[in-house]
Image (cartoon, rainbow, N blue to C red; front, side, top):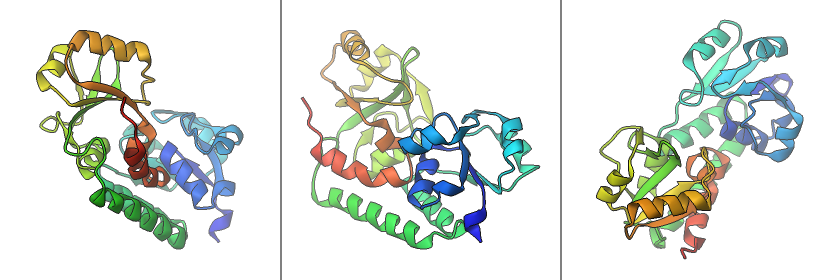
Length: 249
């Protein structure tokens, strides 16, 4: 029976998903970035960061299943773990990939009912955006994830696809993955909105002021909840309502 299996999650959003699948008791270890749910973060053993796993610790825990992600984890470490334990890897670059991942995990973990329920909830919420316009709809956006150097999200990423899904226009859609960008380039791109993500870099007011001072343009610079834009899984269902209720100063 699956309820006896020991799972190690190497992906923050998937750790949260496993708990929502009522599998918290199966989780024996997580990464130091698996901060949700709070109780899971406080009580579960940590096996390093997503890109620097403590392989020896994982071996001692003898998991029945390790769940990782192609972008989050380092292939060399995954290959090593695969020599000892079953490893299931997700590869999420689009909204549809995320829905498929939830479905696949539901099947693998014998949680099809809960997976289908969550998928229905996510799809129902996103349908709301078809009938109501939000502040980013049809607007040119630049989504920043790092400062010094300034890094932004371009094409072939999950966040880019989510921006597309909600009807926003990524000003870096003609470039790939994650792009280092200068103040001059930002000025040239003339985005309507510059989105400062809450993660992985913790943007603060001083960064916002610095960007504003250096670009001196009409772009609106706002802070957004990075988890809602980048955590594929349970958190996806909250993004549409977040956008519809967002107050822009």
